[in-house]
Length: 437
Image (cartoon, rainbow, N blue to C red; front, side, top):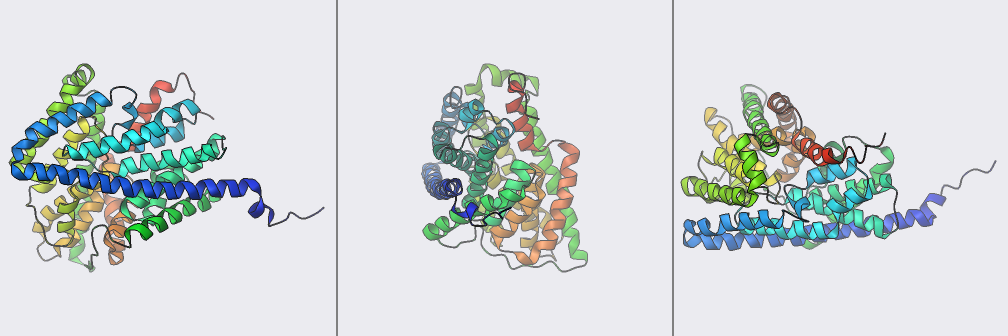
């Protein structure tokens, strides 16, 4: 018997076709993520210039933009609503061409980019990271199809690689992209898939590095947490921020399920009116507590992380409510950046309890704890927090915090938010398209 040629997989036509699709898709995802980041930042700067004259201009702009978005997403663009991560998870669970085309087409991707940018132009408290994952998965999926791949399992690998490249490009966090794909999108890991995933993240990261340079999203944090009484900060942040993250996730899922009843009826009968009212509520929050209610919260969170806060102790809970009303409106936009901002604000509050501990430590632990509470993805939250702040000295405290936060969050929100949202997308199709064995 002749032994197999070890060079055959390397030189085979199918292998090189797969590599070409993967490399081309990763480059495209990185370029789209960069353009999207620039466009969304520019849109929010326009909104800031409007309210710089008077915050009451937002009374005209924000409810009108929210209402317009609700109307635009009531038809063919309905898959552009919300974060986009549930759509990717649902597409992995329902590998039928029709469902994937409806949720991952280029039209949906273009709509997601444009409408999320419009959300920020209206001052919505949403992020761009979830939409970047959605668009990244869509672009990579389309590249796979363009190169002739039709097997649902093979295309699922492209979906996961695109999602990983999306989160890596959005935050400049390559390791977080890999962990996110494994923990949040798929919940499993296949050894043969590891090369695909790593290649997509590396290629996308190199493109981003070449165009934007090497940067840390929130800046470097050099604080350390010595063993001893200071570790009470871990328990405080894990319990309080994790619990509030779970409360937020549960509140979002309840509203999506039509509860309370009056809200469900209003959403079903008058979605445009509901969105306008949510926009009005957001403006009133900003008028009462500050313009930090608008946008992703990046500037405020960065100030808190660097120990130079530009907001008061009201910011954390105010931003939580701003995120909630923005998500209830049903407009396109993600949860990641606003969740990090909320967590930073909560950590800022908790720091007052232990003034002997560096406030930046509380901010960092609050961020990872609240993000864990919302997503119930502790590894992703830990790695993102580490990479966003280049704070490797805080590895053990962060891991301990997210472990506590995950347990506490599960007490109030039994199903992770993205998984629950994906299940709601899949539920109407279960009768017509039974899940594969």
